[in-house]
Image (tube, rainbow over all chains, first blue to last red; front, side):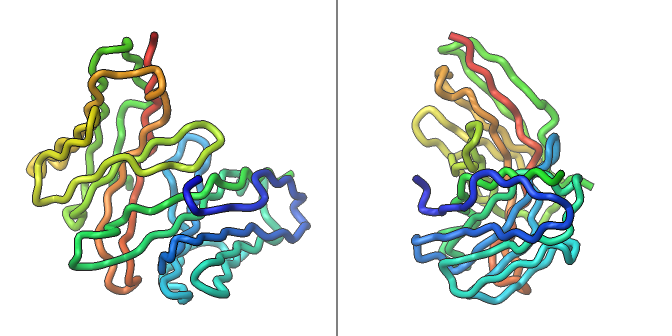
Amino acid sequence: ETGVTQTPRHLVMGMTNKKSLKCEQHLGHNAMYWYKQSAKKPLELMFVYNFKEQTENNSVPSRFSPECPNSSHLFLHLHTLQPEDSALYLCASSQPAPGTGMGRGEAFFGQGTRLTVV
Amino acid sequence: DQQVKQNSPSLSVQEGRISILNCDYTNSMFDYFLWYKKYPAEGPTFLISISSIKDKNEDGRFTVFLNKSAKHLSLHIVPSQPGDSAVYFCAASYYGWGAGSYQLTFGKGTKLSVIP
């Protein structure tokens, strides 16, 4: 158990559906991330939230809409996805602490949601 | 263009021998390097890290070496055990002041198989 929980673990959705992925962490971290892992590709950063504020959108299409209501929860709302969006979506959290040498990118990951778009 | 590269998609090693996983990077802004381990159906878990001011960090059977001039790092596992069989991701980070957090960039991963 890494302290980061993602639901659902598996999701199959049609291209016209709307669904949401949920991530929850109880590690007291201030930064939360969405990553995408497609087959044979590196983990790709999608969004970064720091203290509930979105601080990075890595050129992600608008059919992916993140939401961070508080520093413990992160959602990824999905609508009108394409089959090529099928991938493993990973949530992570970390405690950024510049200058201290602590939490320098040691992100804790959830188990991921395996998404299939049909 | 990939900033973090793991050129070997897979590696097979006999149990008890040394496993060496390699990683190259291109961005000089990276100042912290990490290795993650991932089992099937699980998220990656942090394994070991090294700051750019060091050239070696050791934790039990795992040692990471950093060659800044060559922009190369490697993970050594000695002795290798069957339970080490997993995908290993190299990652590099720097502090993004605009984002206010450390930005991790991952390689594609190397699948290590330790043969009993």
